[in-house]
Image (tube, rainbow, N blue to C red; front, side, top):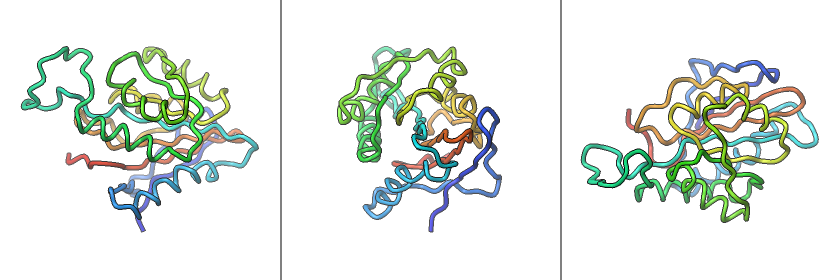
Length: 205
């Protein structure tokens, strides 16, 4: 059976994924998709039980239209839109979270992050809330006091930093072309539980 990385630590302290743990990958096969969806729903149970755990799904934005030297993109590279692959990944996130009961979608104020969150926000009937990536610790502190289930869209540098600010510690920095990490951070009963999944088209780094 595929494995996932999973750690638990008192709130406010950093978790560390064991070096021997291999995060498991979601393929596009239906059976694997059902396993991923089940873990998204059941991950909060891994944390110390409380009436309303706060669950935070932390994901980097999907693929950019200007990725790679042969992208052919001629628009604004400072704030590019998603590529076709990026839109497919954004829709996959919404499908994975369909039964998760997302109550908030948070994004930085960039086209690529906001559009990654749009399918989920539309499916759940919620507005996309902007946050400042320059104040991740302040944002993390607010998230940990906001009941519900949150999808947070970030960037290759801010996603690991936010997971750490919430109480987790990612295995490694995200590579420029790596889009398949999916973090689930659960805050419950004074404990923080962190799970990392791989989903969608794999990163071949």
